[in-house]
Length: 358
Image 1: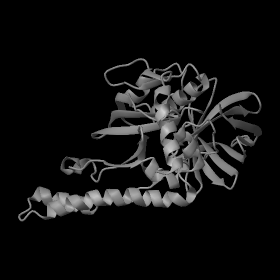
Image 2: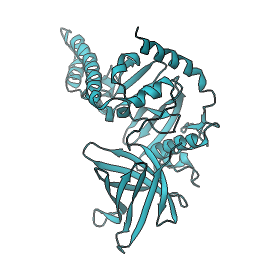
Image 3: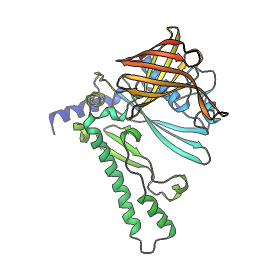
Image 4: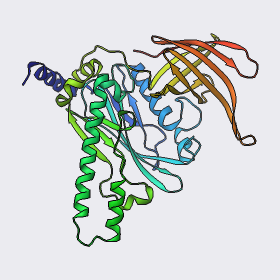
């Protein structure tokens, strides 16, 4: 075994028992249909606050400290999901020192009830959500995606061989064959669930079936697991420090980051940047700290320049969104600086927000 690998394993092994001060309880009010995690980390209150804010805004569309109950928002269909969402259970997974991984199970009830499982992973040094792409060197991203796809395809193809070996297949088997032959397997790091374990990382790809075909889907979701050492040559410097227990924090992408600042120098706001896609399209949510109501931002990132449209509401009468404001800003390290322009009055107000860091 290489010396570097041995040291990595020894450091990692010593880290697992050092998360004793990180506790998870149930976000009140807990009910039969609402069992959602709330993190407690007394040693690092800022990290605790960032993780709870992200989880609640991202999954519940709830801003901590709001007057309305978080459970009422999702269980009564008053979010953008346009249906009822129930959270039944959560589990804190065993991970290296610097990482918090939480598994959450629930059900979304639209036209049909649909169960779901999600995994959320956080850097306990900063409270930041961990983006899968940040874990790998840029030139290794495609390699990792190919490894995941290859494993999923093999699972599906092996099962197809088994199904096709039947001499007189029933109609049900024929439907299964058709479903698995058309199965989507080209998963990327942008669109796949994943979680950390004691010495492995696990990617969870979606199942082959839609809701109508689910009863025929014997495979379900696809789990692909790699040991940390197996991916050693592909890890980014951020991932190596994260997994080894190091306190050194490397720069990561804009995705899933929290910012705080002001509009016009006097209106405090908090911003959650959700996603910057490969084509540069940009999605975020923000709220005024005083009234705690979510406002959607959509726009484009080109280089370091962000152009954002803020909509006021959707007009059923005209079948279009009514503009509220336009934002033009520059990403300057951990800051985003620019202008917020009222679409109706054309008045410009200064916008300045800064990433919430440890």
